Image (tube, rainbow, N blue to C red):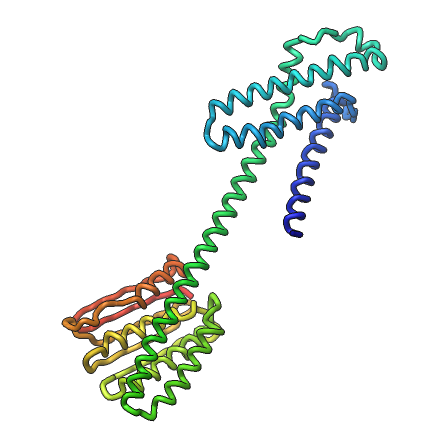
Length: 349
């Protein structure tokens, strides 16, 4: 509520300053009287001239423009604007005839003797109309510029809301996908009666804590992401220890580097899911940081004839997250050759 009041207050102040500047301009302009001497003269006719100018200006801004200009009915708008300008000139001539001519008769007799006392003087009417036109044009341009600024701001806010919503959805998809695979691993160990099951539960608890309380941020420390990967790999190693050859190495200056959370996990998940689905195999994971650039490569064996060669939800998800979070700052290559599946990611952190 306070913000709304503040916005209204700022709008009122803008309008007051605009008309104050107009009054000052007219006063100085009248004082010069085509002489090279600066003077200030507050003309009494401003008491009717300013309200008339305000009337035609606001009718244009808040009636003609919404009715015709914004809907792109330009011909109707041009006709309406022309009539409005002439109407403003007529009103000012009426005030001059009804108020200021009698005023001059009493207070400015010399000027009154030179003044035409008839109402219908086309030149005066068109002159009054022309005097209002620059003010209307300036106000209109200011309004259009402000509208453009507000529209651009609104579009940016909509894009940000869309980005936030889509990122939230993608993260929400990661968690069930990850836990589904992890619970499968835990289930396999419990069926075997393995003593490793309790260790898996402990690691899974750590991963859940990471996902719930840390991975909700837009960026996390790369060190934490690597630790998270190690926990996940540890769980899968317990499950596939009898038929897995695994290598996970990382190097470079990772301290203080930030990365979108859970961005690297789908590549590792995919390697375990499709590289060891029905046979023995190997997985090689290499992570290297050079300056502010991350090199991440996951390679795993696979059998082309098995049913588990699809990249699945995980990689489709991470591709979309890369497009949203690192547009133009990454390259991702997915290759299959000689019964090897390879994901190669280069990313500017």
